[in-house]
Image (cartoon, rainbow, N blue to C red; front, side, top):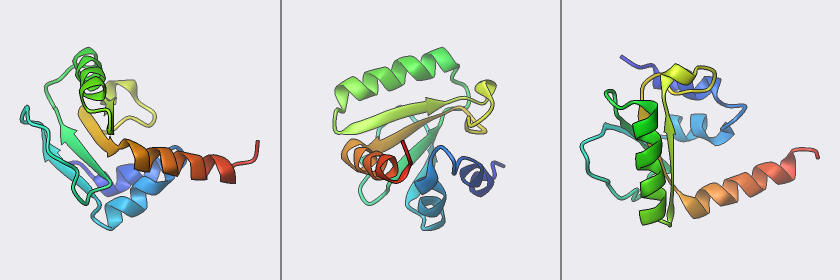
Length: 111
């Protein structure tokens, strides 16, 4: 069983909004079933793709980013360590919301 709360707590330095979003149940975690769901009211959706290799995750995320320009698709695989998710996964987020969060973070951080 994956301890997602622990994971989101550890990535606060690189993704400061994710822990609070997870605690507010604004991140939906589900298994990948070759079907993309709309985000609806979620900040993000994580599709667990246990049997996917990093190269496959990257290729699929690149394709999703081309096909769904209003979203940003990221991927993570535990083989990469450090801030990687504990399981292979795709991460679906609203592009405009993510850009807004990044802008706010960049305004706070000293240059």
